[in-house]
Image (cartoon, rainbow, N blue to C red; front, side, top):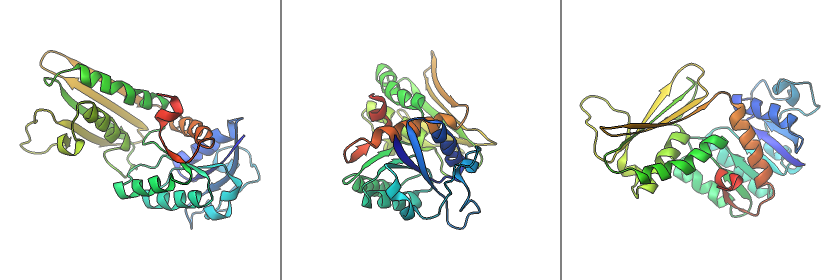
Length: 265
C-alpha cells in the first residue's frame, strides 16, 4: 500500500481526498495537514472526511508527519505549496501537486525539488481533462486559420485565480500545436472596442455559485462551429485522479511528472 498525507486536508478538495483515500484499498492515509490556526487542527481525519474516526488527527506541521508517508498530495496555495514540496524533497518523499495559480518562479522551485524526489504537477487531475489535452492539438492542427478559437471556463465563486490553470493549459497545448506563443496570441476577456485579431486565442473566466468546473473550447468559422466541453459534476473527479497520481509517482525515480505520465498518454 502507498502511504499518503493530504496537505490542505480541511479544504473542499482536501476533505474529498481524505474521504476517497480512506475508501481506496491500495492507499494508507497516514496524515493530514491543515493551515496553522484553523479549528480543524487536532480533528480526526475520519471526521474531516465525513466518516467514522480513524484515530489519526490533523496537524499544522508537515515536518512532524512527513516520515510516515511515501507521498504527499498537495492542494493549498502557491507559496505554501512551494514550502511543502520543499519539505517533501528534503525527506525524499514524492509529491503530487494540484494547486493552481502557480507562477513561473514557483514552478521552477518545484522543478528543483524534482531533481531529488519525484514531483507530479497537474493543473487538473481529471482523467477526462487530460485526455482532452491530448485530443485538442489534433483538432487545432486539422483546422485552418479561418477558425477562431475561444476558451470559456466557469468555476465556483470562491476560486481565487483566473483564468483557471486548466483553461491556461488548454490554451497552451493549442498554441503549441499551432506553433504559436500563448503570451503573444492569448486574449483575456474583452471590453469596449476590442475587435478580434486573426490567430488570437480568447480565454474567459466565469465565477458563480458552486460550479465545480466547466471548460468549453470553441473552434468556429463562418460556416461551422465545433465545441469540445468538459464538465465536472463533483470534486471526486479530481480527487480520484490525484490518488491515482500518488500511487504512480510514489514508485518513480526523481523527476518532474504530469498526468500524461500517469495515463500513459
